[in-house]
Image (tube, rainbow, N blue to C red; front, top):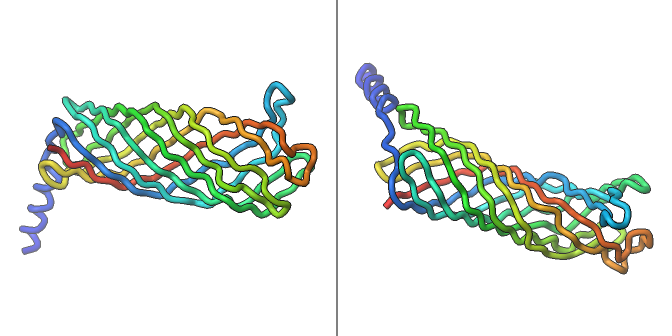
Length: 220
């Protein structure tokens, strides 16, 4: 029995994966780490770093529809990411205050992938994408009150690296890392914020996300 099981496992490992071809749909869910967001005075004013937002770890969920052929894939991806604000660090004067509120993004990207067929059931892949995202900073506050609130649509880019495992002839399980970065967005500090040096002033804010995704692709 033991030798038979070993032979069976060896056959599974040795079985070459069949490259997915044709249209497919997929879904993914995972953990989202949002990098600190810097709040920078409008460059026409001073370009000074005013503060930074630190976030708690969050979640991401999304889906895609695409087409695969000859080891290459193209797809349209929609993904939602969400993180709560943990703290706000100010640089002048220096200090960190407890924060509240959240940031969420809904992105639409066109991705291109290269599947690296190594002759087994596990197929590594790399990819890149570009598109747009609606990034919403919802009621960002610290212990002094409302710091800012706003939403912007901005250009985003994405890099992807992962592995796919052929589960059936048309079902592939995936595990990948995705790095998403957005072009800086322009918002305003709340005019009622107690610090008169920043209240009502315009600033630029960045958004970057590191996401670990578990997913499935179904070919048809």
